[in-house]
Length: 509
Image (cartoon, rainbow, N blue to C red):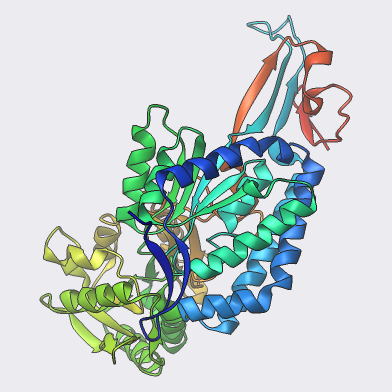
């Protein structure tokens, strides 16, 4: 039987654009993984690795027009958004190159022998080594930043791990172009092109996570798909780490004082955040706790005015569009749920933004309204109107893990007045990033960033954005009482590589 064809599809029309590839067979996946595994030694030199990452950014920038054109044709995300996303991806590659140059991610720790300690300490030298081939599963909503040239790939290569990427079916042509740019950069530095493998097809994704030479996996996508792969990774004869980003409601709490102080500003800001990218951001605020009463009414009016002015948009594919339309309708049909602005289908291909309101009491206990506590991918949010702090606490206690949690406070509350500190503390167990007086859409690429959270936001405690994302693809190893001549250069007393390290409890740089 011939392999299934992989087509690029225009979400604006639903029509096929071009055949891009064929779905990978089990044999194809095996060849890609084995070739990546054999390419590992070429990444051993940190200087070469850093130069490769910088060249990868250069190559992507050189191909920017073709990449953005292809991505827009396949995702309808728009050239401005995609140009910025590609720039972000290039910045991220260069940032990881700097991390590789510095070497602190190796976490070198040396303890010299100490016979006076209890128990005595032998000579111990610890650092981190790459795990091996990493399987990367591309995201639908970020064809650059969370796909072939995205954070999982960049951080894995920085760690010294080759990657095999499972392309997302929503942007196969973009994936092929990006992979070609990365492979050209690898060849420029004498690194085998197989250091960046690419496969297409659902079955290929399953085969990939099960391959015995795959040492870890990174995933961004749905709870259902991510959990299936996570379970497959755990069920292997040799389980592997699976760093999955699955789903997030990203709750927002607006205090009564904040609503009274700046209802219009908060309503307008919420509208911009929940509809950004046609509501297809993993950090879209999907549940908002807003007060009842006049201040809350003004906030809802401001939100309604702003959302009603948002143009129609096209989702990433028609399957997502169908799920969005059905999901909104199912939620809107629940008792006591109103739609000040109705979200749903707009013609044959586009959707319109909207939001739902519900008394917070409906969410405070288990029942049919639990559907409102599940992510609905697209330009819609749920505004739960609370009567008192007890209802806020009750709703928050029922939420699963999230990538973000946000609170909007008044000026006085931001200075510590009232229960503001307690509210921030209550949000902390729910998310990996807690925001005050901001909006969660927009994830800065910075050393202190954390893009992760309790399950089902992610399947691990790691981050997929920021410098510490590299730690996912490393494991520590300690050498005990090992002669200097047999030690890796990173662990020798003379520190020939000039690495930051901790020696006998003191940090050296």
